[in-house]
Image 1 (cartoon, rainbow over the protein chains, first blue to last red):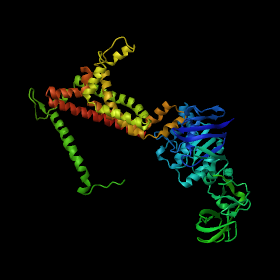
Image 2 (cartoon, helix red, strand yellow):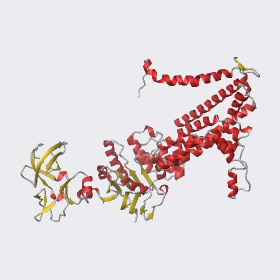
Image 3 (cartoon, each protein chain N blue to C red):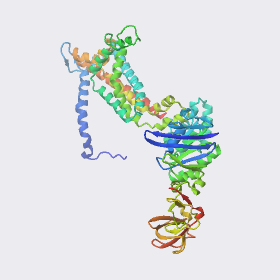
Image 4 (cartoon, rainbow over the protein chains, first blue to last red):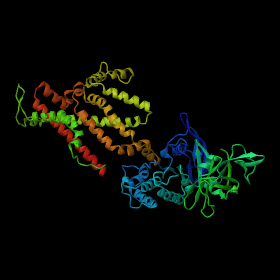
Length: 343
Length: 284
């Protein structure tokens, strides 16, 4: 099989199980985002792919070749570190040319390639600058150019954009994705920012507690989360507790129309804020009291308390009935977009 | 941080105490020494105040020139060997578990508690023919008969490196402990073997620390006068040995003072030169 394959990979640090039985296949040219809260094992998994940590179990294959025990420097990869790890004693060109220097490239070759790479990351002419003179975004670009210098088979990035401010980060996400599509290189990014993952990835791998919760395309993950954790972690969602009364699926004692009665105890209905429709009081499936209104201009978020549970509805100003804090309001669900999930 | 010039006595107060200490315990003794170095020596007596350059003129001979050159060479060698051994050692030390690091640092500190005399005689026993390590090599079949490895340059160098190595490691430790390990990992992802990454990244990044440590060990080794006498032949005696000899046994204070002043000046000049070279390279 061509591409990267992880088979039952695990990593235990003493009694700590950082990564537990992870299997994943990444076809060549795919952009994968590993997403999860801190401590979920995503960085450890990336470091194992890079060879910086050795798995305590399982195998890692690249294009069908077992690379589990191949040392990092023979893996033909490019990596961008969270700290960027630019060499402070070398200038920009020296940093970018380092991998070529290791491979014994000639001065002319190095110069040509450094020029190309600087061009690629929109930093032509910066070759003789010192790393310390660069801005955060420029350092980021240099780190990316450096990692791609010798056309690696795998491009790994560990929280690459976390040091940038919000606006620059969004611009870099788009740029990174376009660069990856142009080069067609297999790319794995570790991030805790779900927007970042949604922007860039072909495949999002949601991790928690050292395990993969779901691996699928961003849209699939958003629309059909595998479980309550994924639903809650990707975007925001309302988790409505479900039960079955008299053969009808109910929430807060009210029957939910359109929901099949195959509900098991403990299951929840995941409804995105934009799939909750506010209705005048007394109408709709459920009713509750408005606790808070967050008017963001383009959308208005209404926080509604129902029997101690809080639901958030996001509506556009046009199709939202006028309700204020303290008012009774009715609400119903776009049941077709809601998903039943287990905890 | 913005600096404002001190305005009142209150602003100056904090440095008064250190200033007094520096004057009393450094400037005055050193000034006395400089003054004495120009005094005239009375044969058979002590010295009389005067201003003569005889004391300085005297060591512009090949004998004292040779001793000075050897003293500098020995101190430089000790500094280089200490850093060459201590730097990789500390590099591995900071990666050990905390408990192991503490054990190592404690045993290194315990070496510091040994006096120069004990170190000297311990090494003279270790390197001797009768009770030395060569007997062990003979027992292991590595050598035919035990040999004496002293007195000689190798023995002096060994003893002095042993004495200075703990300082070297303690000076290198904080800097290497703060080293950004991702630099090394980055080099490895770009195809550098661990050894190559060490020389391409760790060494250049730590250059200032290495230069500072070299200077410190150099200055430390320059003052050594016991070990060369215990472990070396007269040929390996340093200027410090001659200074002691002149001051204590020949009662020639002016000449001893002149040699001491000269040694300090040469050491300062070398340190200055090293710093200058370091700065020039940093700018390049």
